[in-house]
Image (cartoon, rainbow, N blue to C red):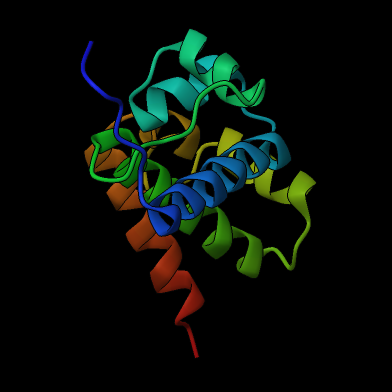
Length: 127
């Protein structure tokens, strides 16, 4: 049997922090495990394992990168709505005329996630 290699402590901490952040953001926005799984490219079962503390996102893998983007989206939206998670969740679920769709539907694809992040970044930069 091959010896198991432990991740360096810094990578483990980074992974645990991001896993916790993405779960908290999805909860605050009212996302189901199924939607979060689609956004970050995991199975619904894996997201359930994340919530149970049995799985941690792995640095260097695509779900980790998508989770970073999702947390960025949450932070941008949170800043715009002044920390009101109900308003943020509502914004995600309602059609946006400039995006020409519901942001929640858009963020379930990588191009859509990037587009919504760019939109929110532009809204935050308004002077």
